Length: 205
Image 1 (cartoon, rainbow, N blue to C red):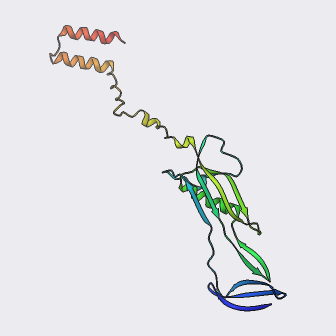
Image 2: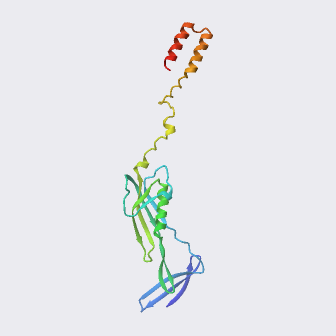
């Protein structure tokens, strides 16, 4: 086995060579003396977007089933979690990727920004180390949540341009009699009219 140094990210790296015969050579780069930049997962979305986002914690995840009430598809969300090859004690190992929960969480955050209620039809691909390297799912919105919310009771009875206000409450019998007496005392009606209207008021008791 031969060895030579080459520049690495954040320091130097060694390239280890294993040779079997004159034509078969395996070369593996091993970083050392520093740290490399970690490759972050990538999340992509293709589809429609609603004006009102939803909370990521309320996202429904249906791995194999479809929504159990009417819904509309919004688009497709995909999560990519890269892996890298490393060497541990002379053995080539694959590192990186995501757990299933991490990939679903990243997808949920993305579709929540688009106003979706959840994802279904989740498909994943895994690397040799068992980590998730890709996740694809369909984002959906329940149809009943696409409708405008009904007016609250307090708003339903509020007067408006097309809803006239309720007529004022009728005066009590006592108030009507007092009002009638004041009209008579001010000579605005005759004693005969007073007695006649008074009898009409008392008739409804």
